[in-house]
Image 1 (cartoon, rainbow, N blue to C red):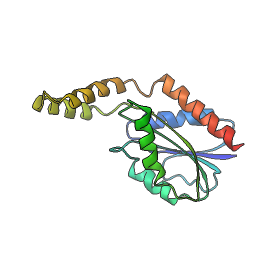
Image 2 (cartoon, rainbow, N blue to C red):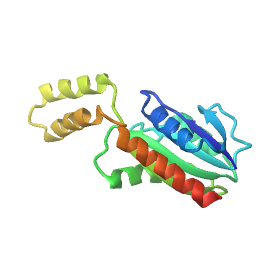
Image 3 (cartoon, rainbow, N blue to C red):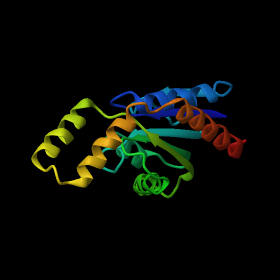
Image 4 (cartoon, helix red, strand yellow):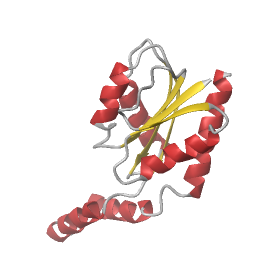
Length: 169
């Protein structure tokens, strides 16, 4: 089976998960790359995205909209990693971009570190609004995210890939 693993990554988080999936697929015929990669020959496409204000990146959205008649598995990283419900909401938004001719096999999301500029923005906002509890939670989440994706996230991504491949063979 020919498998494409493509991703869009800004901070390296989604790339790290893509590489874990690639490692899990090492015994397959693999196409690996960014959103410019041609996936026409692939039977199964793993497509990864960073989270941009609660949605996939624009590059991923455009790529998904162009894919027809394929098996697709979504993966991604998000700065906020507080709940499976949040990850499911992200997936539902991405899923809405995928043409109905495709078969969606599932999704995997994990937390990922954010750029330091995000922390700087939170600190500035807290200085201006010290009573805002949501900002404090956001800053605490930023600190938790610094270690992600971690080894557990990588292993969970590999398990996700393994399970998707089993469904296809």
